[in-house]
Length: 272
Length: 310
Image (cartoon, rainbow over all chains, first blue to last red; front, side, top):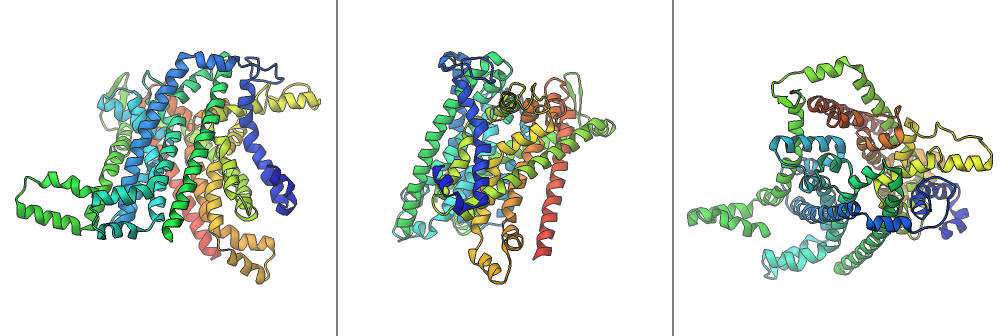
């Protein structure tokens, strides 16, 4: 930030705009951790005093911990399954010429352009007709629907990023399909796979609209948060939770970025 | 490839000659191998996407008799939609609010994307991360954050009161369509900036230099070169923001108040309190059709506009 302010002259008026815009996207969000340390159940100014009370309440709330565990469960299963499906699809469309490739890709991408509420009720209606009870499973299916397109996009750009000849060279050197996959394709895809896993996990972890319609008695974290938003007394603990999620995702994203950079290095050395 | 292994057990029972022929055909046919690899994903998407949407459409032609679903095909739900102007009015209002959100988000995001693409020379990645950081906390809490900003005892009101500008809190800040627009313009910021940034970054800088050499000033250069070339990003951002916003029911519920109600809230209540699933399905199908028609019209308009410019 300080770099941006000192070099504002170089950036001109648009630099000022950039700083104002950053303030616009940061300030509202920063009120969440601020009020999580405020010694009052009312989320309003003036601030009363500093407290860790809300973090203690958060850690002591069984419903919250349960919802967190459910979200972690759904998120990890969804991340792994969507990444597998997204990778298979990405490999198919990047490595083979096939008729109907465009429509097939378009169809897989459809969930990105259908409003969540419509997909949510459509799945609810289907589950109802099939007699499938609502549970974490139905939430997982819904989340896969939006994570597979993301995963496929990430993997397409990763698979297009490295040379197809590397796979062919491996085959020419006598490796079979299976060992070629494990010794060439898989290592080169790792940065994409990690990105896809993280993207799918965070998407599922934060998804509310679909989960709201498809949840049974076991709820995920966003549904829990939604139920707490109605009770002012419980809100500060929810803000404490939001602050924790924020800090943890900060480390996750930093890790992912570090991994992605490593991937770029692998790519540039393999090109030599 | 991996699918070769998967196929062998399937054809193992057939005659050896046929196996070899099939295997040969399979290995020679790229489309066949491609589709084998694609089939698990396509299968899941058909079961989890095409089937539910198909059934939703079927549902919209059925009716409900208390808890019983009557599977006689009828247009009753759509007739009800046409006869009660409230639904069309709400859909129209949702489209207007979503268009407002789309416009505000893209117009606010464009200069930021432009700044990162053209003005930032070092550490572009740092700026991109800086933009996504606020979106790593829960979506519900981000929307809620605006309640803190705009609320009765909120940041703006308490700030203005302590400055002595106003005597009592302003009530018009929260619970109206404007609050929905500003909240969503904030919530969608990263989604709007990234596609615009990507398309700006792709622009060949020599084209901009050429425009300068041919005598265009900064404004004309922007309008005639940079803006048209960044349109794919602008269109992508617009759609990414517009489509989910039309069906949103969380933001209207939290910050929209009674005047900010959107079609998503009605659909939600049809599947909840009002408990009329077929009517809810009909409203959803009608909304989906309206959105699709609008998106097609939007794409057609921008395409023809770009052709005229070119």
